[in-house]
Image 1 (cartoon, rainbow, N blue to C red):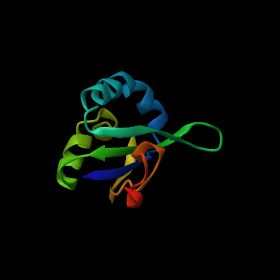
Image 2 (tube, one colour; image 1 turned 30 degrees about the horizontal axis):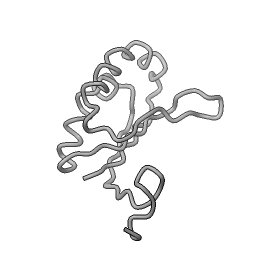
Image 3 (cartoon, one colour; image 1 turned 45 degrees about the horizontal axis):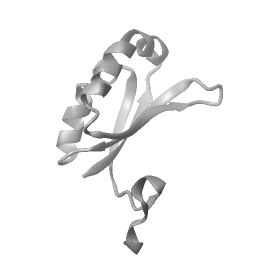
Length: 101
């Protein structure tokens, strides 16, 4: 099952992102089997303001447990984290339009 995860940055995020970057990247490498795509969202000045993940997990509980081990999550980079089930229905990453297959 796929989940879109949006982590909205806290007021301390710029400092915490820098401090926790290597641990976060190490976590990303270890979680790569579950990450379909991920990266920072940028504000108008080009600075990170949130993070977006598309995770694959058995259920939402498993997705939450996985993300809880990300140092950005446990370290306070995000003030809010939202999970939503996601269906990859169309696009070049999905091989076209799923309803035409």
